Every structure is written in structure tokens, then in C-alpha cells.
Length: 417
Image (tube, rainbow, N blue to C red; front, side, top):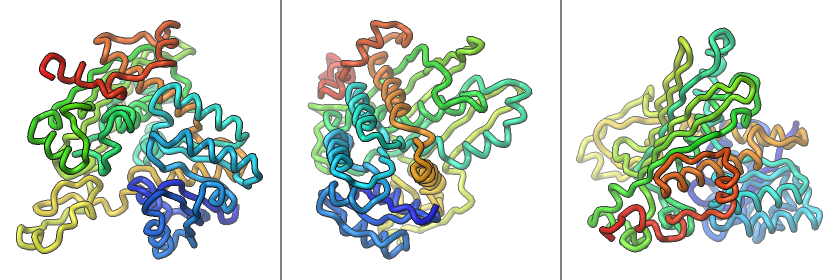
């Protein structure tokens, strides 16, 4: 398809990680970036790593005029304003072939619906970046177990977890800016991955119909006084006043519309995993077959003693969100590829070049947002939420969780606040 010219809006942690993924991709160049901060650093890194002659542009309009597609890697609270500017650039003649948005599509159902509307107004293909569905480990097990699925039937139960010690930047910890806590930040991955793995072979990603959600949210580690103080000192966020959940778990039930069979996806996420670093784990059970995935089962381990660790503080060069720089460390030589970032770039840009939506488009991102917000609502109400109920669907359209409103203490601390 020739060289596809990609631009990034945003130059923070996720943009840098996504840029690393491009080192493993042929035919896509990162040609530009615009951001409030960090753009020069990201552009220089892109050039030095051979992923494109990346230039810094002063505005979204200028960037859009020099790209085939742009990827929105900016903070959650800025998404709508950014995509509105992309729409204006398209109306002004920017030669875009598609637009990418990093998860979550919106902090609320209303925000996600607004982005879908803007996408339709652009009349361009869209891609929702949910990396875990693109993980090679997941696509490989689906290929390997395809004969079993065809002969025995699809998976019946999927369980997914994502855990680490907490985000890098203050806005991620602030529920009024991020849209919640760990459920909004990470359980969206787990819910989407379960939904995907449970989907029968050959069916669309939204084939299974969500029928119910039950969930629980809690503030465990980061609600303790010493950790609240550390968070306030380091990130400027006061969980004594505006707390978010650092643990979330739940269950989504899906129905096969063709035969009525019910299957379940169980999700867990936390910001208190103080072991090696980021851990993605998943397993699924079918009739007579199964698979298990653990991102920390690595072929490479190293050991660093205390004296050597004191000489060089480089914890996160080993693994994303690593909390240690000494001892026996698990090393992931190519995290960007392991987590699916490489393949989601390939999928999106190939689809855009062909004039099509990516495997996961913004309409799908909206559905994942609905499930995440339904989980918050179920946790607040303390009961299983019937997603087939018209009133529940109506309630979700205007719903903003107590945690996202900055009122999380009402359910996370209760009378103790």
C-alpha cells in the first residue's frame, strides 16, 4: 500500500509506547505530532528509532494536513475538543483517510456517543484502539483452538485481569478528569477481551448481546493514610477528598442471539499490584479445551544486586509499571508487540488505506463504554444490572458515576469519611 503517513495528537506515556510499536511495523511512518508538552522529545525519539521523519506541528489542523491518519492519544478529558478540531480540519480539506482514538472512547456514554457522532460527520473510517484484542497470544490461541471450537462449541467462560501499581500522571488518578478510577482506566481492556474471546468464530465483535452486569468497586491500598499522603505529594491528588477506586471486579453475562446460550466474562483490575510490574492475565474455558495467558511468564529474567541497583535507577526499562530495580526481574524484550500495540497499528492503517473501518471502530468503543459505565452503576446500586431493561438503557445515557463526579467517598468510604 506504500508508506502510510501517521500523526499523533498527544506525546505522553501512551503515545511514546505506541511509537515504540512502530519499530516493528513496515509501511507506516510517524510523520508528525502535536501536543501541549513532550512533542519535541517524541519526535526526536521517532527519528532516532527509524519510525519516520517526525515533525512537530503547532496545531491539529497543521498535523491533519500532512497525514493520512491521526491518532488521538491525548488525555480523556480533552477527547471531544480534539476530535471537533479534527472535524474542522477535514471540512477545511485535510486529506485524512481515517482517525484513531485510544481507549476509552468516552468517560461517559454521552461522551462516547458524541465522538461517534463526530466520526460520522467526518465521513471517515475510524479505529478504536483496544490493544488486548490484538495481542498475538490471544489471536494465536483462537487459531490453535479453532477446530475445537467448531467441533465442541465456543468458549463458555472467560476471565481477564490487568493490574499494576498505578498510573504515571496526576490526571489519571483524578476521577473527575479521567472519568473514574481503575475500572475506567483498565477494566475496559478486560471487559473487551472477554467479550472478544467468548464470541463464536466468524462472528462480528459485537455479536454476543450483553444482558447483565454485576460489579464491585473499592478503595483499598490508596485509601490508607500513608498512601493517600504519598499520592498527594507525588501527584497532587487528594484521595481523602476526591477518591477513586483502586480495585474493581465484576461479571458480564452475554447471550448468543442465535441459540440463546448464556456465557460469562469475569473482569478484575487493580492499582495495587506491587510485584514485578504490569501483569495481564487471562484464561478461558470451553467444552473440553482451555487456554491461559500471563504476560509475566517471560523467557528472560535478570538479577540485580543492591549495590548495582543503587548505582543505576532504571526500574521501568525492564517492564511497564515496574516497582523494583533489584532482585530477580522479569524482562519483556518487546512489550509494545506483546500487548498488541503493533498489530492494532497494522490493522487500522491497512483498513484506512482500503477505505474501511478498523476491526474495532468507534461504534464498538461506544459499546465498551456502555459496559464500563454499567459496571459503575451496578456497583453503586449494589445489584446486578439488567442491560435489556429500557429504563436502565435510558439511565446510562445520562449517567455520570459518583466517583467521576468527585463524590466517590459516598460509596468508597461511606460513613468513615
